[in-house]
Image 1: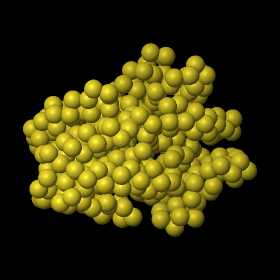
Image 2: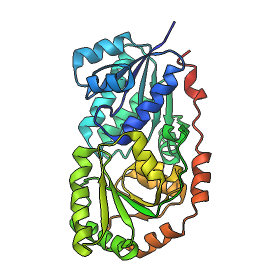
Image 3: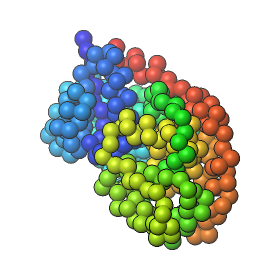
Image 4: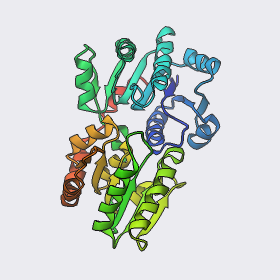
Amino acid sequence: MAKKVLLSGYYGYDNFGDEAILSVIIDRLNRFGAEITVLSNSPLKTSKSYGVKAVKNFDLLMLIAAISSTDVLISGGGSLLQDITSFKSLLYYSFVIWLACVFKKPVIIFAQGIGPLRRKLAKKIVFNLLSRCELVTVRDIKSKKYLKRVGINAKLVSDPVFSVELPLNEKEGTVGVQLRAFKSIDDAFLFSLAQQIVTRFSDRKIELYVFQETIDYEICKKFEKMLKTINPRMMTEIVKNTSQTDVIIRISRLEYMIAMRFHAVLVAIKTGVKTLAINYDAKVEKLAYEAFLPLLTMSIEEDFDAPFDRMEQLNPDKLLEFSRSQNFEWNLFDKYFT
């Protein structure tokens, strides 16, 4: 009999990274003929896009019905259990896990990055819930060590997008920039970043990537204007409203990528693009550390020259070697779906 699997994550918000994770999970579950239900902010769109059942994530009655009728809950991937972005979102994803435990459903924490957890209450909630889960898997060594200190045995896996075959296209000399609005990013940082890009790459096309329109588009427009203010002849294009496949193909043809979002950095690494990460979140810092990438910290006295020098000196073969080392261990999960 086919297993019923419920997926909980940041789904239905048109976020490139989370939708890529969802696509990977669904592809894997389809191999087992699983009956898949997704908790989504846009259930109709999710259902149509992936050919699965989807229910509104914040509809309590539908949520209870979905959990009570499932065989297993998958929470993740991504960074759901952290209180930096929003304490409310942490409470929501924790509530879903708690409800599954109440109904005695096995819970799989799927390739998550755990933390940061600033509040004592957040730590208490997360550690208590994770101790009750059937399987806890994390996507970085720091999350594994963090949980080990509180007695939770987590399995280390890579981000599931690492398991997808991506194209290795010839580089076209283009420079990609992927930005998102965030409280610690200000105009002074953006203008200094724009100056550095114009100084080094005035003869190249600059592609600005929008991974989630509601959060990324306005800051990308602002940054494009800064580039044009410094040098009106700069060739620029804002890349938005394109499919996941098209975005990945375009990134694979870049010479360089300067990126904030985790999956912008990941896709660039996996396609052999020299990458400079912008540290707006611990998950990006962790990935940059593991892949030996240069990092912009967004500090007041930022040194832009050294990270840009390091980016230009990166060896694409080393990046591909790192990405190939990130094998995703599906065997940890497959037994729950057969």
